Image (cartoon, rainbow, N blue to C red):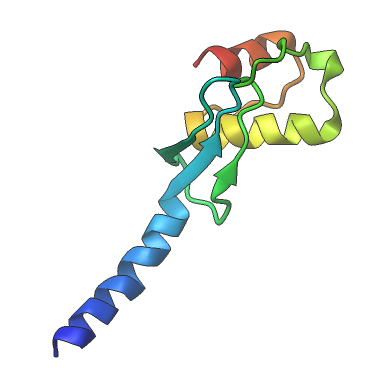
Amino acid sequence: MKNKIILALIVIVLPFLWLKVGVYETYFAEDNRSVFFIKKHPTLQVRFENIFLTDEDDKKLDQLSDEERNVVINYCKYRLGVKAELKTQEELEACKTM
């Protein structure tokens, strides 16, 4: 009986956590760590990337590749709850400063 209750809790809780919890890594010279967060919107993606949390200089919008733009769009949407199309530098700055 006890095992069935534990199994039922796992079956219910794990999918919820998968949909609502995300993680990204910080890449600083002195302190690399994982940051867990509650997603603003449910998604199957768990691992995100915050390209702003590095020791490198910030990139301007026109310097971002298509892949980097998609990474920033996903990060802004699921981590910050901001739906950005990244068509202007202001949208990029809004994702960066939140």
